[in-house]
Length: 149
Image (cartoon, rainbow, N blue to C red; front, side, top):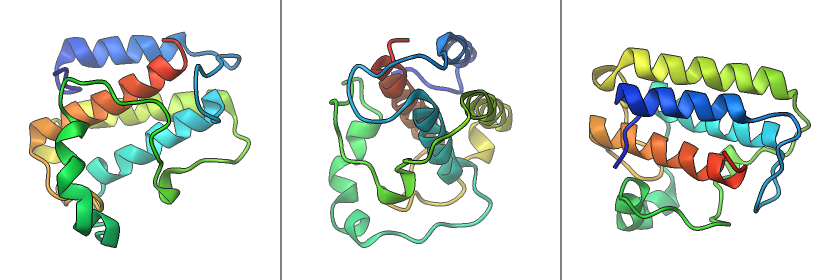
């Protein structure tokens, strides 16, 4: 499984990010490209946070059962449900969102595996340092494929 802490994978994702344009259209789903960028950026909050996020009730019930699918080699299905905190419906500035995700990727990679994921994920619980890198790669790959890059 690819991992965002791997320099080649990190550079590949950054290159794919640069291929997105304001006119990129989704192959599935309802988000615009700018909304997708903000959605992806929000997911990094969990890995980069300096404060814990409260665990969700649903996560405590079933998070453990689906957790492995977040970082295995099998691509995510189209149309998976999105947590309300990660849903984006606002009109956004594409360039700002793209620059923000680029900066967030840099922060994640620069911190490295020892300084991310200090607290458990609110839905899925604890991840190893490697799992944080794999899960975040897989999430970006899913959405970049959604927009054809």
